[in-house]
Structures are given as structure tokens and as C-alpha cells.
Image (cartoon, rainbow, N blue to C red; front, side):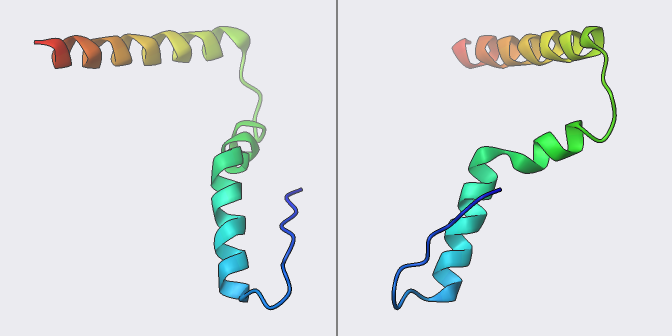
Length: 64
């Protein structure tokens, strides 16, 4: 659970903005979505390898 302390006289809009930024940075939405269903270790590994290959292709394209 995220806790955002509100300072005296702070605008509620500003506090909401801080909450949203903290929510995005902690990647809670991603963890909630990933925990909805079970993913095998082999599937996770396959996704990681595919992501690494994609990043490597992008890096090589930048060099040329």
C-alpha cells in the first residue's frame, strides 16, 4: 500500500499527482496484472530472452 503524507495547506491535486507518480514508479499495476494468472518459469525466461534480443537489435541499428 502506498502512503503519501499530505503537508499542511497542500493542494489535493498536488497530492494526487505525487501519488500517481509514485504508483507508476513502483510498477504496482504491472505486478497486479502479472499475478492475475500463473506464468511458468520457462515462459518468463522465453519472454526475457525475446526482450533482450529486441533490445540488442535496436542497439545494433543505432550503431550503423
